[in-house]
Amino acid sequence: MATTHFILQGKGGVGKSMIAGLLYQSLLKAGKDVCAFDTDPVNATLSGYAEFNVTRIEIMRNGDIDPRQFDQLFEGLMSAPASSHVLVDNGASSFVALGAYLQQNEVLPTLAEEGHTVFFHTVVTGGQAVVDTARGLYLLADSFPTTPLVVWLNPFFGEIVLDGKQFEEFKVYQQFKSQFHAVIRLPDAPRATLGRDLEELFAKRHSFEAGMASSTTNIAVKSRLRRYWAEVYRLIEQAQIF
Image (cartoon, rainbow, N blue to C red):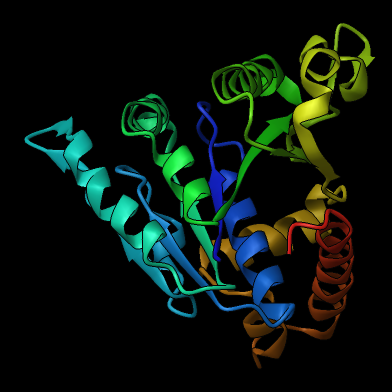
């Protein structure tokens, strides 16, 4: 049956939607049938990609999150075509609400009973957000102990260290490493060159293929994007999630 990928993190602005876009493009490159749902009530980034098949679900009603709006997501996941991959890009502001909905409505056991596979994806960053993102990882692992986790390490904001320890030495890794299906360490991107290239690409909501094919993209930028994309795809392929 289908494979569902939930992209979840309680800390905002750490590259979660970027990772959703990387995963979407990797699945397409691998020849998979892909669709997505965007449930971010504030920054619906993924649904801004005209190239992608994304359904936006409006979960806000009268200024508050209405959990009943997740019913549409549940229906979509259950009816996903066999062998397809479905991405769910959820916002930081609805992290708790979606987690509670999944538990209260037994979404994951129901999907499993129908033969669907589920992965949780989350991001851990360096810099000031390292503690918050590690906490988000802990909450997912602790709340959903039977769901395999894919951890994405995003070094854009700085080295991923805590009290002088690398990620594999973090308490959350030591406690829950048996739940981790894969750890994907994204390549570092020098801020002045590749970092800026990526920021501009994502701001335009362009895929790598579109960015590299654009007549307005110069040769040096195309070369950097091509190398980065090839390395990211290699890492995702190694994670064996498709």
